[in-house]
Length: 400
Image (cartoon, rainbow, N blue to C red; front, side, top):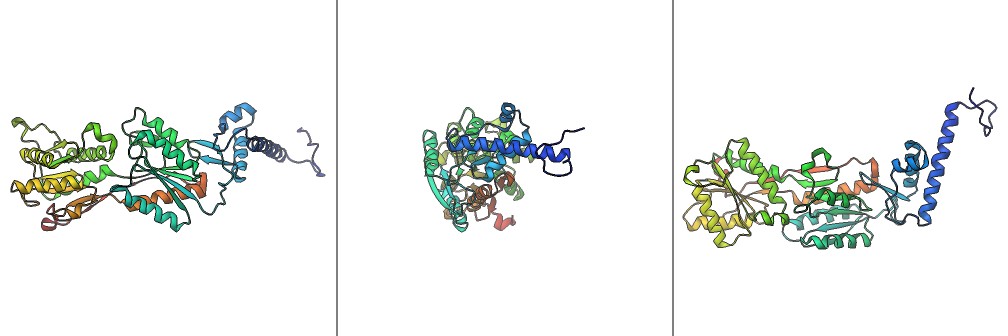
């Protein structure tokens, strides 16, 4: 026979389920009160990560369910914020879930070329939702990156949209873990841990640069080209400053493999039958454009994907000086679409959705802030489109 609860005031005995539930409620409330007193007393400072549910369960002897309810109670009271995949942190008093105007920190490597449109998308969406923006840049200097993030946190931002350095690091996973452990929600922009596949637990909004390069090669192939080159603007040592290039190279390689072509740069007489090739050079000047054009012409290629717009425009000039017509003798597609329409022969270009990237990154972060753990984890990739102009001959041969 189960013992009667001496605290019951009912004439009839309460059921075992009711008694157990009452005890469970009391246990979670006691734990919640103890944690709340510790937070208010400064045992855990604002932004400090609290012990995990598993650790508290071991330390207190309480079930995981009881510990989880205690945390939920603290979240409801605005004392704790929970970060997907990172843990629970002491919330700043001013960062209540009822706050009507969020301040979002944005970290960019710079505000030149690629990022103005991204930033415009972020700012427009935040403004339309009654939120504001705090911007910081680190100019591709990793030593300044943490200081810039600290600046944003000290400014009291509620969440972060980050374009951090991940390439060229010995342990990019560790770097991402550090960023995910920051005391406010984080959305990565144009950065992710591709190699982890489903193991990547970051929230991110990225361009599918591999897909963009792949589509460019396929586009040129549909136009009848069977010898398709890839020309890039930075060598291996310089790729850390532009992670897009590695994705472009991977997308090109995937396309030529799918088509049965070859991306070898070995251009000796025994290998002139090769169907395609890739080459890299540091930031181009006019003489380097001449050299790259010679490599392209020597391979017998009739088309090329060029990263980026400036380099493709220089290649047009080198071709013109040799009497090679674009697109009749050489079809070109540039990558980035920043100034492709300003080239002497307007360039067909792979065009990442920069403005849309900014809008979606801002939207994901605001959803995370307002919905908390009820919000699904967003991992978004936007495939760039191809903007057809005059340099590939598609307007004459066939539309894309």
